[in-house]
Image (cartoon, rainbow, N blue to C red; front, side, top):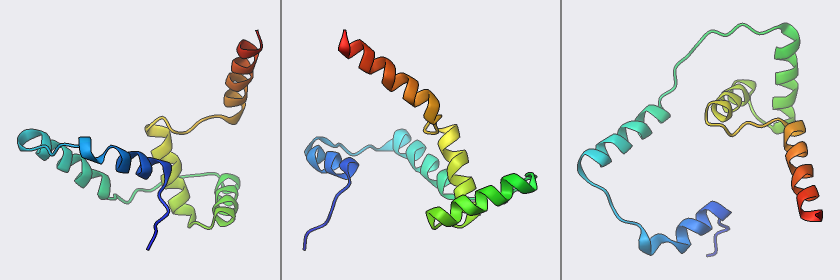
Amino acid sequence: MKYHLTPEEQEIEKNASQLRSVSGEKRTRIESIIDRARKNQAISLRLSEFDLEMVKKRAEQEGLPYQTLISMIIHKFVTDQLYDKDELRKVLAGIREMKAM
């Protein structure tokens, strides 16, 4: 049976022989980070009606519950994975200009 691996999984598979297990304090610290990442905490959040409706529409388009979408957005923001499309376009345009020189 064949599995389709994501690029990240392919990279892990390719480098699996180089992976080394960790023990002691480092392992405890890593397990603690993983445990905290798995725990969820309920919060109360005030949003404008317009923003909430737009989030709900976008979540429906993505096939997600709106709370999950909000959580994903916050996670991407705090881990520097959320980006502005206009800024990205500017950066890409700059790269193209540099290559054209």
